[in-house]
Image 1 (cartoon, one colour):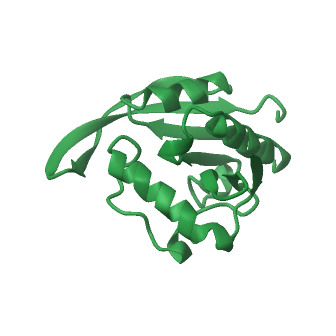
Image 2: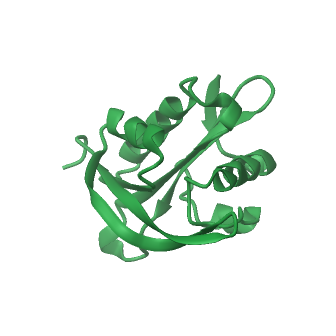
Length: 165
C-alpha cells in the first residue's frame, strides 16, 4: 500500500468509496456523493490523499475548511473513507496519519471531526492518533436513510497540533 496525493484521476474511485460510506448509513448525513468538481472545490489543496495498492484506491482522507474567516484559517475538518473490502488493514491509520502530517506542515493548528456514535471504529482510530472527544452534539440533524428519517447525534472530536503554538 502507498499513500499518494489525491488527483483527478482518482475521482471515480474516491467518489465510489464515498458513496459506499453513505450507503452504509453511519458515515455522513449526505444522501449521495457529489460530482467531482463540487467535491474537489470543498477540499483543501495539499491536504488530500488516497491509499492505493497495485490495482486500486483503498480509501481516501481529506481536509475541508470550517470557515472562510481568516481567524479560522488554521482549523480544518477531517473526512476519511475506506473501501469496505480494505477495512481493518491499517489503511485508515495510514491515511489519517498522512493528513495529520500535511496539516502540521501546512500550519494548521486544529483538526476536527464529527462522527456518528455508532461508527466506533472511526472514533477509536481518531482517538489513537491524538483526537479527543469534546462532546456529543445531540440531535445534530435528521438523517434520511433507507426510507426512514431520524435524529442523529454526532460525536465531536478535535486534535490540537503539538507542533504549532
